[in-house]
Length: 405
Ligand SMILES: *Cc1c(COP(=O)(O)O)cnc(C)c1O
Image (tube, rainbow, N blue to C red; front, top):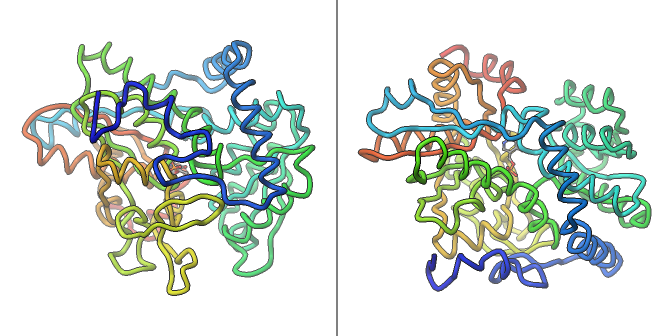
């Protein structure tokens, strides 16, 4: 299928290009020392990850350890409430550890093992990426250092406990604001000093090349399964698909199964409390081109051109940029990016819980809210919502801050 001059039949051969660009977005903006490490990972990715042995091992792990394929559920009661559109959910909440993140963590850590690394290094904010990494490292028997700001360590006690039980080493970062940004800097520094023995594992389709490509490819399983399952269930393609976009990994993997199909694709960013800078994290909607964390994309900047403070009720979505492929698909118009605010998200959180018996992650509830909006606007058709994770982690927060609705 051709769209705005881009041939989607050959899209994955051409995007990203050899230097890691999706159009003008992406690339690798790191020190010469770190670039050596990135080149090593890129080369290993193209040799090891394309080998039969690696592919077969990852397939087996997905089946026997992660519990894949995850099902697609027809959301019948939710659909009936809003009219004639049929809503479906891809159930990444049923993936082991309760979210999609393990899909790319298992791929990244398996690659680290094949590369002969002894240790994996990552940063975490809310702790979701840290828990998925600690899980993967335990499975493969690698050491695991998780860099985390001391403020986040206090806020995210249950995830810190999970990581410790799984055997990960928490590296407390105390300087600056002692949150995610400082944790990223600290993890990068530790990696630059020890890249011969370790591998850095990024938590989304962000960072320098090859990470946006590699993480998308490891998440492709979500889109591939969804397309096959939906055609088996209904005999046709869906009319539309929806996913939430933070860094953009669950959406990138889900969308990648449908880019070459006549399917409307929606990526949903968090509008938080409103449109003022600092009140949301809708980077594609309100941001401008810039370089941060080693890649060129669309980002929210403060008056000095640095990454702006961002906010969302969903801690997994409050990142001031999105992966370069999203910036590209946005510019191209192949994916429509839109926003959902906190309040509509909490309504959708309760709707899905009450009508379907599924408590979604607050991140995923953004996509559910948009699915409901589409169901009200379209007069017929079908929509698959990517339910990126389960909401157990969010229950106390929702009850404390919003009460029972
Ligand atoms: C981390 C997280 C997200 C956001 O990350 P993406 O890279 O945009 O997918 C979304 N949903 C859940 C459940 C998460 O844990």
